[in-house]
Image (cartoon, rainbow, N blue to C red; front, side, top):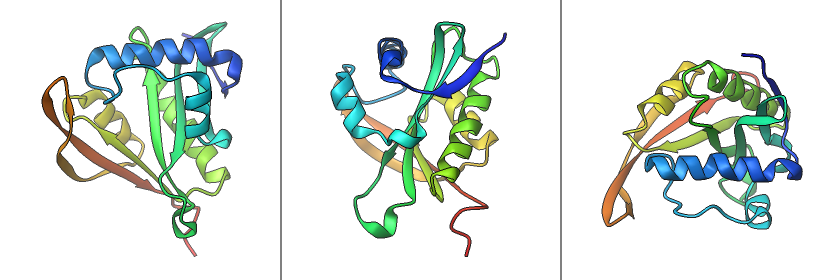
Length: 165
């Protein structure tokens, strides 16, 4: 399958939102139960590191970063979100997309990326490990979802080129 990775633009939002809703429907991608508006999502994600992967006009997935803290000492740490459409999983697209967002994040000065993943989402855990993330622990009963407590596997990747001085 041929595909391109490019910077996410507002015009991509409808398809980005649809892919996010697919993730919500799996029950293993996010605590969110509804997709946000563009304005809400836009406020919560770093502009420099928003990518989409597409095949022509069809989006296959997206990745974006969120700041983890407003404190200056933590300016180079961001939370990674990566979502693939259900028909794009298992085709190597996620590996290329996550690698591209890592490169984009390093170009923007980020030295650490972190992700919180439900333990049941073994494909996402595997994808993250494949590109150098390591498991740093499990946050037990971090939140309730549909009346059930959910654990979250915390993973991080430390850059080997940014923040090494």
